[in-house]
Amino acid sequence: MTRPRTTLRTTLRTTACAAIIALCASSAFAHGNVQCKEHPKSEWRPHTELQKKLEQEGWTVRRMEKTDTCYEVYAKDPKGKRVEAFFDPKTFERVEED
Image (tube, rainbow, N blue to C red; front, side, top):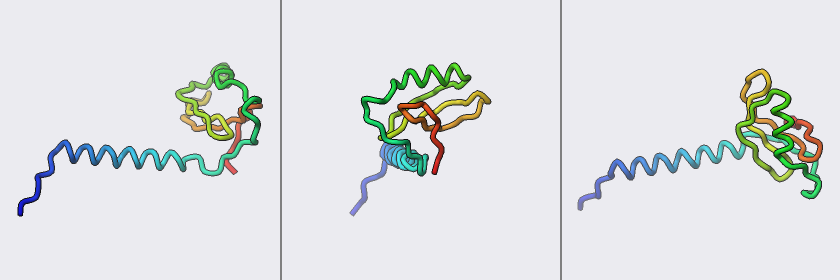
Protein backbone atom coordinates (compact mmCIF):
# COMPACT_ATOMS: atom_id res chain seq x y z
CA MET A 1 0.00 0.00 0.00
CA THR A 2 1.47 3.34 -0.99
CA ARG A 3 0.86 6.58 0.84
CA PRO A 4 -0.01 9.71 -1.14
CA ARG A 5 2.93 12.05 -1.46
CA THR A 6 2.67 15.27 0.52
CA THR A 7 3.05 18.16 -1.83
CA LEU A 8 4.82 21.39 -1.10
CA ARG A 9 1.51 23.23 -1.38
CA THR A 10 -0.09 21.05 1.33
CA THR A 11 2.89 21.52 3.61
CA LEU A 12 2.86 25.29 3.15
CA ARG A 13 -0.90 25.46 3.70
CA THR A 14 -0.61 23.47 6.94
CA THR A 15 2.26 25.64 8.17
CA ALA A 16 0.39 28.85 7.32
CA CYS A 17 -2.74 27.68 9.15
CA ALA A 18 -0.73 26.76 12.23
CA ALA A 19 0.98 30.16 12.21
CA ILE A 20 -2.35 32.00 11.94
CA ILE A 21 -3.82 30.01 14.82
CA ALA A 22 -0.76 30.72 16.97
CA LEU A 23 -0.93 34.45 16.22
CA CYS A 24 -4.63 34.63 17.03
CA ALA A 25 -4.15 32.78 20.29
CA SER A 26 -1.24 34.98 21.37
CA SER A 27 -3.09 38.23 20.61
CA ALA A 28 -6.10 37.04 22.60
CA PHE A 29 -3.93 36.82 25.71
CA ALA A 30 -1.64 39.78 24.98
CA HIS A 31 -3.29 42.31 27.23
CA GLY A 32 -3.69 40.28 30.39
CA ASN A 33 -5.96 41.89 32.96
CA VAL A 34 -6.83 45.25 31.42
CA GLN A 35 -10.38 46.16 32.33
CA CYS A 36 -12.01 49.52 31.64
CA LYS A 37 -14.97 50.76 33.62
CA GLU A 38 -18.17 49.66 31.89
CA HIS A 39 -20.21 52.39 30.24
CA PRO A 40 -23.32 52.09 28.08
CA LYS A 41 -22.33 52.13 24.39
CA SER A 42 -24.39 55.31 24.01
CA GLU A 43 -21.86 57.10 26.26
CA TRP A 44 -18.78 56.01 24.28
CA ARG A 45 -17.08 58.84 22.45
CA PRO A 46 -16.06 58.15 18.81
CA HIS A 47 -12.75 56.34 18.38
CA THR A 48 -11.79 58.92 15.75
CA GLU A 49 -11.87 61.54 18.50
CA LEU A 50 -9.40 59.48 20.56
CA GLN A 51 -7.14 59.03 17.54
CA LYS A 52 -7.13 62.79 16.91
CA LYS A 53 -6.32 63.47 20.59
CA LEU A 54 -3.44 60.99 20.60
CA GLU A 55 -1.99 62.31 17.35
CA GLN A 56 -2.08 65.85 18.77
CA GLU A 57 -0.08 64.52 21.73
CA GLY A 58 2.58 63.09 19.38
CA TRP A 59 1.38 59.49 19.01
CA THR A 60 1.48 57.66 15.67
CA VAL A 61 -1.61 55.45 15.65
CA ARG A 62 -1.30 52.27 13.56
CA ARG A 63 -4.54 50.52 14.48
CA MET A 64 -7.44 50.82 16.91
CA GLU A 65 -9.86 48.14 18.07
CA LYS A 66 -12.87 48.03 20.35
CA THR A 67 -12.93 45.49 23.16
CA ASP A 68 -16.03 44.91 25.30
CA THR A 69 -15.12 47.81 27.60
CA CYS A 70 -12.09 49.64 26.10
CA TYR A 71 -10.48 51.13 23.05
CA GLU A 72 -7.30 49.21 22.28
CA VAL A 73 -4.64 51.24 20.48
CA TYR A 74 -1.55 49.96 18.67
CA ALA A 75 0.76 52.91 18.16
CA LYS A 76 4.08 54.59 18.73
CA ASP A 77 4.03 56.88 21.73
CA PRO A 78 5.59 60.37 21.63
CA LYS A 79 8.99 58.82 22.48
CA GLY A 80 8.76 56.51 19.45
CA LYS A 81 8.18 53.35 21.50
CA ARG A 82 5.75 50.79 20.07
CA VAL A 83 2.88 50.29 22.50
CA GLU A 84 -0.39 48.49 22.92
CA ALA A 85 -2.48 50.81 25.10
CA PHE A 86 -6.03 50.75 26.43
CA PHE A 87 -8.28 53.76 26.89
CA ASP A 88 -11.61 54.32 28.62
CA PRO A 89 -14.08 54.99 25.77
CA LYS A 90 -15.97 57.65 27.72
CA THR A 91 -13.13 59.63 29.36
CA PHE A 92 -10.18 58.66 27.10
CA GLU A 93 -8.09 58.04 30.23
CA ARG A 94 -5.37 55.44 29.72
CA VAL A 95 -6.10 52.20 31.57
CA GLU A 96 -3.19 50.20 32.94
CA GLU A 97 -3.03 46.45 33.55
CA ASP A 98 -4.35 45.28 36.95
